[in-house]
Amino acid sequence: MKNNQQKKSHIISFRVNDNELANTRLKFCDEMGEPVMKDGEIAKRSFLGCTAIKRIDHDLEKYKIATAARIGNNINQIAHRLNTDNLAKKIDNKTYQQVAIELQGLVEQLNRLL
Image (cartoon, rainbow, N blue to C red):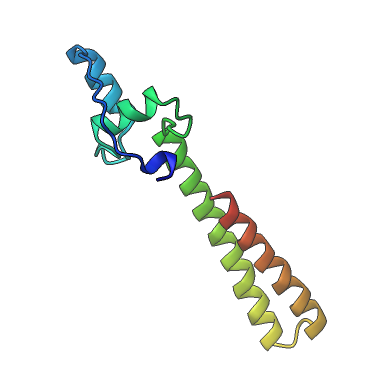
């Protein structure tokens, strides 16, 4: 068996007070206040030194989503105008293609940031 697939035969338990439990649970909730993992999983990851657990700043995440939505809206407005101008023959095909590629690149960058 691989190391992480070995039979688990040891039980580790400890007690915490009400405030410690409540504070720990608050750290691992989603934006709706629902727990993202069970108490045992939190304790196990902490005990094993897992560094992948991070607290989510919900206000910051909401700000990021709102900002991304505004940027996406602006990109859509530019794309709409680009298409309108292209159909009206106000811009040449080369310019249309170049700007369309740039807009697609912006969308991809935005998606990577999110």
